[in-house]
Length: 198
Ligand code: SF4
Image (cartoon, rainbow, N blue to C red; front, side):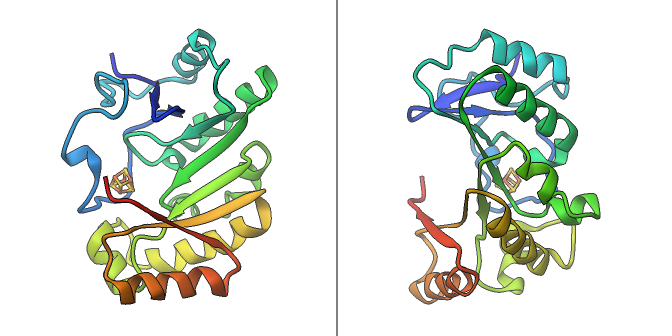
């Protein structure tokens, strides 16, 4: 059975769905079946809210101060379970909740989901991946044509709604693209996280 909760580098992650509206060229899912202590992160069947709650009840959160929604899929594609799980966790324990997302949730759901997320999620990390729409389309291969501006809108809304919002890129981008991504973040007053490519 695929892990719903898994740990990696002293962090605990919730893998609530394998659905995703992108097909990124660099996605870890195309290279291996798991990350961290999970045997596999591929769900044979999408977990139900009851499955997710049971995994949370069975997990010892003693040494963790944050739960990160970041699975083998885009968490906002399972919005109902994401919100219900975050509410459940907040009722049960005093822990921060972070969402790692591709930032296309508003496009996917055809409405602004940020206010609902902000009720229970503290911090958001949004994968920027590229400095232009053209490059973004090429590297993330989203289901949508207008994904990049939608991502930037989502980031601006998030910046106002969450305690901490960051955009993220990996350090393998050329220096001029990193500088352009930095400008995108700076123009919106958002922190840019430059992750090491693993
Ligand atoms: S958005 Fe995330 S899960 Fe989806 S294809 Fe890209 S890297 Fe993979």
